[in-house]
Length: 423
RNA sequence: GGAGAAAUGGCAGAGUGGUCGAAUGCACUGGUCUUGAAAACCAGCGAGGGUCACACCUCCGGGGGUUCGAAUCCCUCUUUCUCCGCCA
Image: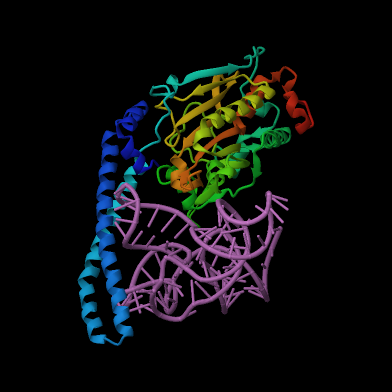
């Protein structure tokens, strides 16, 4: 959520930059500024009314003390009208605040100037590519076939226990998954990220803080009896660690990593390209997250991209990095780099990481601030990224590392798995 | 799940209807003193709105109510602690 003061100060610039998202925000922005003006006018009126009744109350107090009950009663009557006015103004003000907020919730983050324009994922800009795409032997299989062949992932069993999109990993498949999680966490903590284990269910306030609520309510599993949501990503609980916090400048930067399962309803996304591990309702992910000084956040974003690159390089998976275009950019993000690993047997790229700078967009909702040099409270920048999403990494390994004799485990993982071949 | 107690500023902790945004102590920041440091002393020290800046308004776990006036009284929710029960 953007700050109104910021909208007011940079109106034209903001409207221009939002065009990258292919939206004409002029009406929204103008209305927000207008609503805010009206809000402030109402607030002033209400404050004045309250101020008056406060001073009358004080007078009454003094009169009572000195025993001048008659005079006090006269003043009491005077306040009745004032009270009514106050109540009315309060209601009016609440309505205005609500209208303003509802509007602000609908304005997406402002894309960074280097975000390419475009509508769909086809307009994303490839900024980096590494790793050779292997030429597979005849009879090479997609990962869901390999999963069955080597009996390491059981999709049908998941159907039986829960439903589609909840696979069961077994044997070396389960071990490989656990190895990946540990390896990712080790890489992240070595790079200075502090490991956290966070709750997998969050309350409404947390969902709101990171922007999942109210807009993406339908995408999260909701536990109605307790009004809690299953997390769609560790970003939600991990970022909310810092909700309603005022840091000191020396606290920054803060680097957090955590492993969690992620739950997504994926309502309306059935169809092609959802086979196997490509799209699931429950999957595992290791997340990295940073809270940064505004001056340093883009430097930090680059650092996170480099970090994820390092992991993929060690895994020896062919991947590319995309700078998302305005049309594909997430609602809360100002700049996002997607990592995609090449799925050789499917002959397509699979997104395995998304690294974003949210600037103050989340921090504003979270009330996450730091005390700056001048002693003033200033919003932090938040960033996060996956390092990495497990299922598609697994798919990439299975497909790219398959040989006629079995799946060859990337060398870096062997100390974690304890085996070097799935056969 | 049952019974009881509690929730106040970064922390500790006063305050039970009226000049209380809140005593006091600690912590923190600046200054005096000192060769330097400590100690001592002086000053400052929560957040949000609002303003050019003041003024002013709001906030004592959340929400609602009583009252001219609420940190203080009432209702409700949440959380924490103690005891009992159940349990990985």
